Image (cartoon, rainbow, N blue to C red; front, side, top):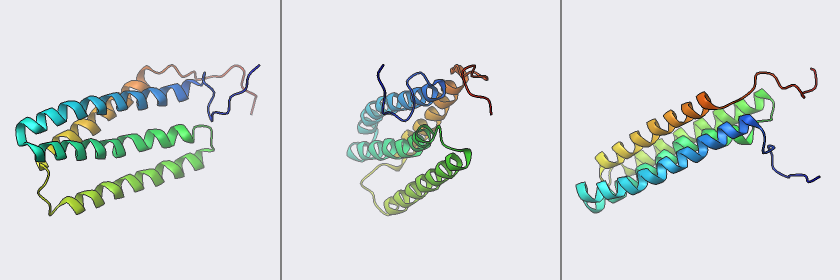
Length: 148
């Protein structure tokens, strides 16, 4: 019999939902980076490329942190999970606000491309998170679980 050092067992259906959401978000943002870089270069040249890169980076920070936090605290007490998720939400909002404030007076990037890529990334990731939860097969009852 082998033992695993991972935080969640590989057969945990709830962890599988979070892993699917994270994987799908990564694929979406990877594809969006390729399309956004191409479209940004065609529409706005070098500033469009920078806008797309910044937009994908912010979308990754905004969309990925909550799923990672929930996956890491999956088997923690509810209060711990809530505190970590709220802390990561606050941190990611602060990061986005600070980055946008620092970029406000600069013109090396295209604001339109950044806004479009960021919006597509965040909304697309939310849709993929919903799909992962909606189609995830998480049982209501665990027959082998000890009685509480």
